Length: 488
Image 1 (cartoon, one colour):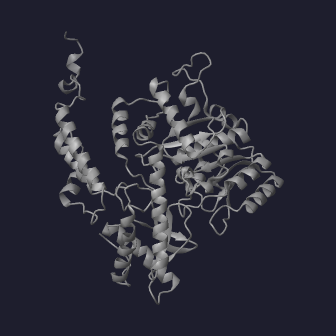
Image 2 (image 1 turned 135 degrees about the horizontal axis):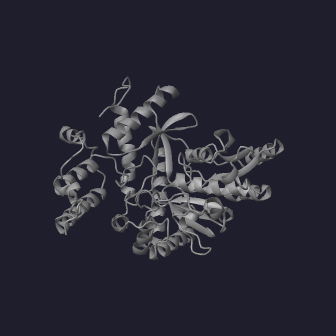
């Protein structure tokens, strides 16, 4: 039937633009790409590939007005990814990355295809989502009251802080915080997401108290206690203490039980930022560091770190039910509530909530919790092995004693001052990134620049650990001392 308005609609828009003409062929090609990628992740690659001029030219092209060949577009996408840094590679050690579990890739594809939104009721997806939350809590040993998957550690930490704010400053979400002098406490090594959360919660950066650390780089409990007592005497209202279970810089785990004692005595919310380190609570090697975790009010753990799933996939867990609804519950005319039941979004900071939990759920179903524990134990062993190699090598010195899987160390050349060694180690880190065999990063520990690696990838086997020092020493001994920059 022809409508009177048909002449206003371009011919190109009268048919669906979404259907691929050759779905089976495209999926067959995609399977080939994925297989090749996974095989390339099984071993370190010999160098960091260059971005060729032809690809750069295509990436500078204008907006395409007409359709292009699907296979050609996919070829370019793979070409771009191959020329990019991937944390799935065995010797990507620079930051706390994912290991790109293959099963999680399948879950990502399925969840993207169905595009379920867990902000509102999503049927069986809601049940799976909560089962995955329970599995995470059980794995790390946390007594779950409620919890949700979020977009990342930043969002999880902010969610916890907003819940704590509403408990400490009732009505703050309605009236604001201008009438309060509030404070939040964390260690000197806490992740910057804590500072951002304090800012986003409207408390202001000056509300954050950075507590000094001890010789193991853990929050000093005596200094925390003194800070709380001093602030209360001066009329401040403590909102939360944020303990870190695995700092990003050195992998230190704050003394959770002793901090919980202080928080219980002071009546202050205890949040544990375990975005990186918390899965190690399930291991026999490192589990003792996490004593007291069960007394926290909330915890953060990122599945896209030590659990190996793709970004972004974080979890916020709370010990009691109620604080999330108090912090986020609301009524809107476009999202009606049946009787007194809430929507999932009434317990979360985010509105658009993709089915992130499917990645971890499917991975747990296929591999099992025992396999995850074994993988984490393996990365802890890799860190201990590297630390031993550093101690035994004349050209390196260890910057700290590792607690988890992060190791910081310096390459040392005779006759160099501390400041010269700082410059040398930063240039060495950049040289190693450009070289591509081992991808690590520079860091500063106790005011000195060093090389930092973090083992979280199940693909990193013990036999390649020594490669880190071999490549560092090779490059560190050969590039000119007067060189001030490393370019590709």
